Length: 365
Image 1 (cartoon, helix red, strand yellow):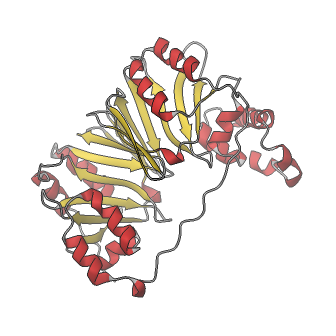
Image 2 (tube, rainbow, N blue to C red; image 1 turned 60 degrees about the horizontal axis):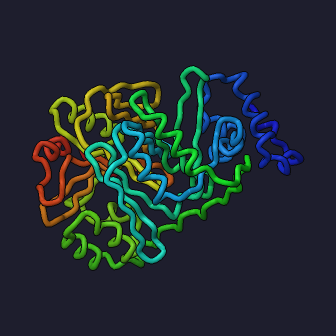
């Protein structure tokens, strides 16, 4: 284990790009196919630090001017968007069109709204940007990658064989940072605050507000207003609005959606980005702990063994009830959320409700 080599006396050198590159090359000798994210974790660094260490050695530091860089990606044409969290990777191919950005107080947000590339962006967490070149010289894999302050990837954009590589090269040249240092200084996030005790929550007021929701986008502000955790809310609201189902339900949901040809929406996100697939799922493949969708335009890779709880939630809107299957990790973070495909003004698909009705509620102890 390379991590074992990182003894206390070495820590002063751990931020140096040359040191990280050397340890990375040593690790690849024993594990040639290891991915950058896993290699960084094995060595005791963030993925961002590993990417930064290769600035000048295949990688280029870019200015993190998101409102300029992201719209320029449209010139590359057909690309692959990748957003992930610890338990799930969401990959969607298409074009980066129809970009918008806004600021509300301290919040800096962005949107891509397209049939293929559909993103919700939280730019306060986008701190570092790099052009990354991996693989062999004959067929290099080019990407633009963004990281938060902790060195965790928030979003990546990969060129495909259909991409305009000349446009990619122009973007890299245009946004190359004057500072090409091969180091990244990282800062850890504070641990999330614990939920308030149930006894301190106004559950009657919370229930009334839930009953009168008009839009799914009002759900998170409601949680914040009443200072309620998401799973805490599901436990207390009543089974007419939320109930637990077996963690194997993710697999069953995808299989039913495939078999019934029901178009669905799959949301996967992290602090800085939520990425959405809207459409069918067809090719489902189990590979070790990963359950996968392997379709031409959409790939999903989800660690079933990292699902701690799965819930069905029902949220009132002006278009009727919107039903979701929500997957949570052990730390309470959301792994993925699934809906029937829908747009504002259109009621939920009856076929989607039939799928959810087939998912057996867990018997309460």
